[in-house]
Amino acid sequence: MAILLHNAIFATMTEGYGLTEAAVVLNGDKIAWTGPLSDLPAPYADAPRHDLGGRLVTPALIDCHSHIVFAGDRAAEFEMRLNGASYEEVARAGGGILSTVKATRAASEAELLAQALARADQIIAGGVATLEIKSGYGLTVADELKLLRVAREIARHRPLTVRVTHLAAHAIPPEYAGRADAYIDEVAIPSLRTAHAEGLIDAVDGFCEGIAFSPAQIERLFLAAQSLNLPVKLHAEQLSDLKGAVLAARFNALSADHIEYLGSDGVAAMAAAGTTAVILPGAFYTLRETQAPPIAALRAAGVPMAVATDYNPGSAPIASLTLAMNMACTLFRMTPLEALQGTTTNAARALGLTDRGQIVLGQRADLAIWDARHPAELSYRIGATPLHARIFGGRFDA
Ligand code: DI6
Ligand code: FE
Image 1 (cartoon, rainbow, N blue to C red):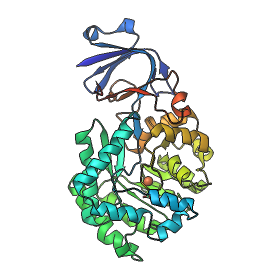
Image 2 (cartoon, rainbow, N blue to C red):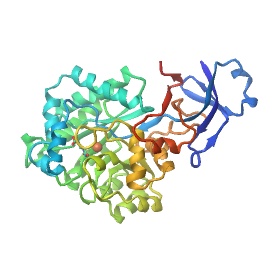
Image 3 (cartoon, helix red, strand yellow):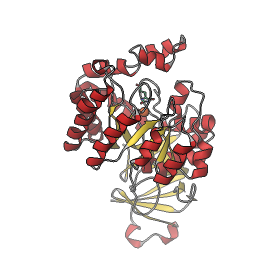
Image 4 (tube, rainbow, N blue to C red):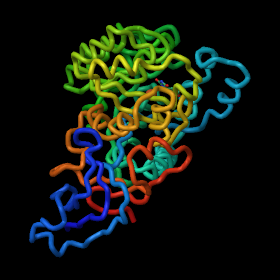
């Protein structure tokens, strides 16, 4: 079933914004034709026409880094930090990630799914059609598998493509305190093998940080991922420079994420490997960090930059991808064009997807229609989501 979209400004995201007023035909779940309405091929002459009233149309947004499968919330921790505690102090005091782990382990799969679906709905309402979701709040083999199943299940309930990432190497649970190597051997790697065998995962991630796992521990996990032919990603250089991005690049990682403390060696390694930088200003903002990622150096080196929410209960309780774009511009001096590339073409790249992120022939028919005239408005507005309508797989949302 084909539909025709016209009277709109399309940001095709080819060579910059790639703005055009040409018409677009969607056929099934693919973009089937673009061009001036006067050249419409005969087979599409009778396709239902949608006059978009001069609105802006972009590829549907892609949120390439989130942790939305968890139970509970961390409003109390938010308050604790406002009373003076640092993120690391909260984590070392057994709070932080571990309080979410406790609540998540206690929750049933059905409860986790219901909570995750509510968060997915918030994200979809922001114009997103592809969402990456990580595990990482279970931290036992059984609980990590539980989270991964819930993440996979979401796409069966919502018009959304979900890419699932294994993140058992997210934190060291209390029962493994001081035994991070044993955790990698007994939980992270076995859960990875089982999850892969059950078809639950698309990529493997880890948290390389003083409060989490060392580069040597991450390397053992990455070797296991490599033996299963699974692509890797890494939370790297968020709070310190452990050279995680250099390690990730050595494994041809899809992305290195956060990277506030990335050095010039990391920038060069990512550029050489084609690893995408995933910029997460929501966490930087929430933690009131002061060291911004080296955007100018990444730009100069030609490292592709993506922007994501990092939606999680601790460091980034942010559901809005356009707000993350605004923060990337205002806090990190990314340009509105880079911010939109970061949630379309480069976000697809960070997930290893080549079938989406641009409005061109043959790409998936996932589009966002905005109450806006120029793409810079998406990064410029704060606290309003100017989404007019969303199209997923060639169909308007009901
Ligand atoms: N880095 C982060 O910012 C989040 N995870 C990570 O590896 C924090 C997750 C949390 O605090 O719950
Ligand atoms: Fe994260």
